[in-house]
Image (cartoon, helix red, strand yellow):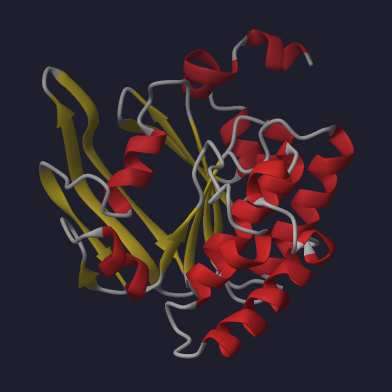
Amino acid sequence: MRTPGENILEVREVTKRFKGLTALNCLSFEIRRNEIVGLIGPNGSGKTTLFNVISGVFPPDEGSILLKGEEISSKIPHFICHKGIGRTFQIAKPFSKLTVLDNVIIGALKSSKKISTAKEKAKNILRTVGLENKASMLGCDLPIMFRKRLELARALSTDPEFLMLDEVMAGLTPIELIDMIALLKEIADRGLTMLVVEHIMHAILELSNRVIVLQGGQLIAEGPPMEIMKNPKVMDAYLGEEYLLA
């Protein structure tokens, strides 16, 4: 049973602009240790931009981001990775000419000095995500379901305390989706904090302790999943009447 603890991530009045477009607008929220937080919103609401700003791909134009109380705003991605943030990408792009095992070994070398140690760690991670029998395949030969799992394995190989998942369940069949939800719950129960972007509302309801809703780069709602699903602002901005009818 996960019990939320102290804040692990704090986003304080973060703004990010791209020329004339304000992708994030004075955005503030906190995530507590051991939470699984869902992040939802319509396309263009700023979800992936937020991931990129937190992970160091883009610096914020204004505001600050704290990880375990330490300022990480404008730090480069490998610094932030070493501090304990891992992420997946919306479009899974493994090293296509490397084996599945080698893809994960690369991440494991962050904390393992020896190739042999990194290899053993990578094998354990592949076992966790159900890819042990795909270890010798090339990344480019994996179907979408297994690419999603490899993307997850690569993120786990860096030993994150805080894991950001960008639509890791998109494109899965209903059975594959059930399996992925169970896997993410199992991983979270080992002590990982997660921020999950997902358009599949069933997955958000199943996984999340709390949901954050963005629209136009601003936070418009925050709270328990079922409360968020009934929020009029969320209905208007994202879910629509067809969700209520369903």
